[in-house]
Image (cartoon, rainbow, N blue to C red; front, side, top):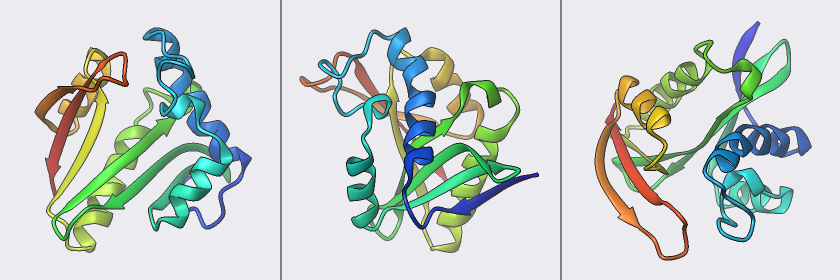
Length: 159
C-alpha cells in the first residue's frame, strides 16, 4: 500500500533515500562532493536534521511501511512555498510516485493558503525539466551560480 506520511524524526532511511535518489543525477552530471557539496546526493544526517529544526516540513512516500520517496516543503512567504529534495528511489521511478508526491505538495500548500510552489533544478537535466513541465510547472528563470558546476533552472506552479 502506498502512502505519504509526515516525517517526525529524521533517520538513516531518510538520508539513504535522498542520497540514493540524487546520486544517479550526480553521476550523470559529474557532480562530486568537491564541486557540488550542497547537492542532496551528498547530504549528511546532521544537515537534514538541521533543515528540519528550521521548521521545514518533511514527508516520506512509503510502500508497505518502507520509505521509497521523500519531499520537503518550506514556507518562503504567505504565497510562496519551496518544494525541495523531491526524491524517488531509482527502482520505483516511472510508476507515478513522483507525480503523487507533487500532488501531495500542491494540496498541502493549498490547505496552508499558499498560491505557488517554486523549485530549482539542474538546467541541463532536460529529462527532469520536461517531467516537471508535464506536471504543471513553468520555467521562470535560469541562473548561473559561481559555486555550482551547472546552471540552475527555476520553475513554479500555481496551486
